[in-house]
Amino acid sequence: MDLLERGIKVKDYELPKTCFNENGTFGFGVEEHIDLGLRYDPSTGIYGMDFYVVLKRPGQRVTKRKHKKGKLGNFQKITAKEA
View (cartoon, one colour):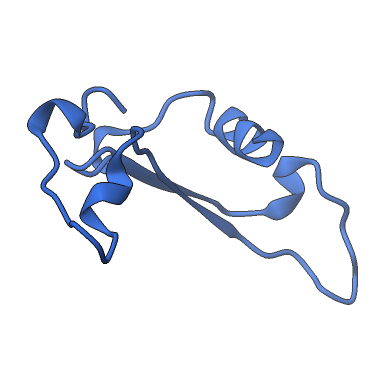
């Protein structure tokens, strides 16, 4: 959670609408890992980092389990607006 918080802070706590999926997931990228407050290692160099977050409500497992699979109601799904 701390690393995600620092990643969103690099983006000034604002993400464009194109970062969000209709299913409530979102992703964004950071060009340089040193912006996150991580140490610089000359042998590794500077690299970018991508974040991808999947938001779910309790009960999502009903659609994935082997025994007695069920459907997920619309009230249980997360929309892009809620994310």
